[in-house]
Image 1 (cartoon, rainbow, N blue to C red):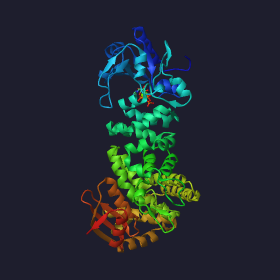
Image 2 (image 1 turned 30 degrees about the horizontal axis):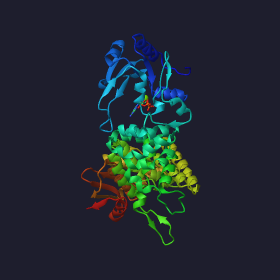
Image 3 (image 1 turned 90 degrees about the vertical axis):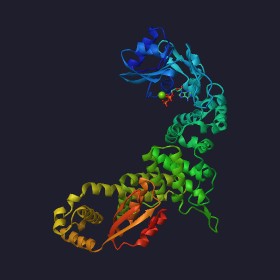
Image 4 (image 1 turned 180 degrees about the vertical axis):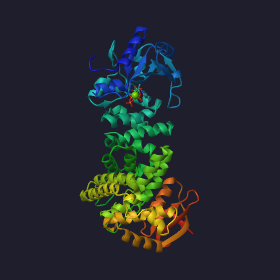
Length: 510
Ligand code: ATP
Ligand code: MG
């Protein structure tokens, strides 16, 4: 067979196993990728040699016992780690996850028969050529994903294969063969046997894959099996002139329109999940979703916790879902203020989210023009701020000390003066800054209170950002878990603070 290759140390390894009398092949993803004209990202090997024999043959290398009882060792070659698995068949799967026992065998065909899909059940070696007993190459060339053997049996043995099927379909744009497709849908209830970590690893790959949209539309029933929170979105008519699609199709189209990063794709999947709980219709029969972003947060949070998603990723997604529809500003000063509220990283992510959301609405692209304006202003402001730092101010710390400022207040005052100058660079003269300083000083207020409803670090950041977004507040100090908040600013109004925090679902107590 021509067209296959492997790093020379992998080929040497296959040859050494052969010379010791054990057939040895490259198998699985490495064969599949090369038949698709792609570069494999790793090389798995299977062989008739038992693990202890593999160890002997690979004595010159470091060998790790990856899964000795299942016949897998990992050899650390120069070109990278290679997993070597002894040909094996599997006993019954009484738990729907893993075989109760495995038996080593001497022929490759039995080993390939235990693998999940025909396109993954091919092996190749320089000596024996391509071994493809289940027609994987033919399936691949017509873009078909098919179980090896009886689909219902194979998917109930190990329900993770249901999600693997979706992942391979979404990654390579494959159609799932009708009987396999029927089994994927029929067996989806078995997914509850699979651990959250394994489900999450597959889900992330599915949503980040190039053909995610097609798969999410066609296999919504499988996705909502693991994410029941999303179920009300399927077929939900929005009855709103801004929206051309149902809630589910809108979310999927928005997901497809955003760059393929887990936090962005998952944010799009969840951003409107709260819409079905706050839907109202006005007298004209037009649908509205007031406050839906706030409603989306707890639903997203409960789903992500169940999935045991990484903590930092969870925080990012909750923040982005909460703010997915807050305006980013259309003028230099509002964009700057919003940038101060969200920070550069979140602002950039929110821009991507707003654009994708707009594309997913499928109606009026003029909003996209407005977003591109916000983006241009954002880039301009970043470039300015990159050039203009505290040390470029016409006054410095020493000046402030001579004006009677002490300790921590020096940094805060310089930050406030920098903000003042960034809004209008012509203000950067010692006289104007001194006048502003006097004003800030005179109007300085202090206020302390307690906020309830914060449970996560991101909540604390959220509260701080909401407060600092108010024009009367200069900075806010938030303490978790006590909920104690101190704000400094000018003519602070507790009512205004109460309102702003209540809008975001927090309660204020004095
Ligand atoms: P990639 O590494 O690109 O995700 P891969 O095909 O190499 O794709 P792996 O998860 O590394 O996927 O598994 C290697 C091979 O092991 C697969 O090609 C398949 O033959 C087999 N395999 C993996 N997981 C299962 C499973 N749950 N059920 C049956 N066979 C499996
Ligand atoms: Mg692999």
